[in-house]
Length: 457
Image (cartoon, rainbow, N blue to C red):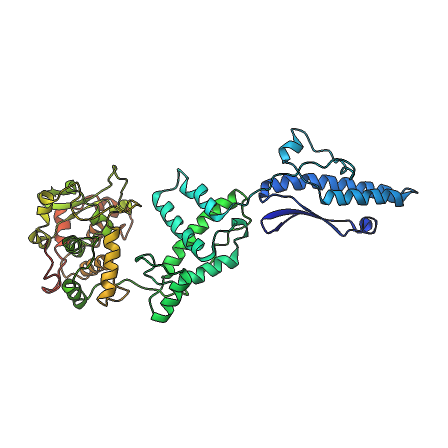
């Protein structure tokens, strides 16, 4: 039977009750000198054969007249067995069955010690099974690395075989106590100090969704380790994520939009005009931040004599819409045309429509704008429920409450949502929605005159 102590597997076998007095043992416990379950099983199989032979010889000795002298020799053999150094199973087994040989007497030369097997550390597992994997996507690598880095910051590196439910639970509790702004600004504080700061200042903390995402990345890594028998169980599954603060995004109010429009832009990494352009496009289209920031000049085209944004994959950079439904065309709102959006195609240098944005090391264009926007909204006192994504909520809410005759499937198509009703008829109809219907839908978006008074292209 296999047992784990620390990072090493051990062989344990109970001595039959009738032989315990003769061998002075209730059980046999031998270190297998490996942290790999597969190898441990093979070595344990060899020891099982040897202990079976030892029990048999002891039983025979008890039936002979000179049992006492025979038993002393068997006890010595048992002590040697418990200190035996096992070579690799391939060397021992060869191609045939393992003979049930008795352990060598003490006078014999001992076999050389097997080299100590180094345990697989968490940092090594990340590199081997995620970062170096040709099958893992860039998003998977980035998100898993972030989750592992947070764990390493909190608890340090450790063998994966000893990371269990206690550590997983402690990590979950720590995540729920960290500020929601973690990673959006430079900080020299430890994670524990960040958690204390969030408690003292009453800051919003990571949502259940964010905590769940980190835990799921670690769970996916552990699934690979478990399949390879490098760990005995996955401690990252089965957790509840409803105990933390839950921030529900909502639409902008007219007062909040006016406050945003009048705010001064202080970012040094993103120019003020770029912030205004991206904000206007989001407000009058409902497009995602990533979709806007990756627009290229050729993505602004006339379709059926209507100016449109074309949201589609860019094979040269590997960028693609979030979902299959995200590949679509969005007619350009008349307010954007009035603001001069069409002129960007001729006045902007480089391939992208929106100037002034850099691509991050992770390949994300607009990441700096997202961070700067979060800092701005915190500085001017906007609540946690308001994010850049709230423009998408606002557009969706406006269109679904519009008095004009706008169909639900038109809204879904404009925003890149999967159809609300996935019948064959709906799916077929979605592919046939005219550009004019989409233009009618986008023109239903409207704001008060003060909402974007200071924002021009």
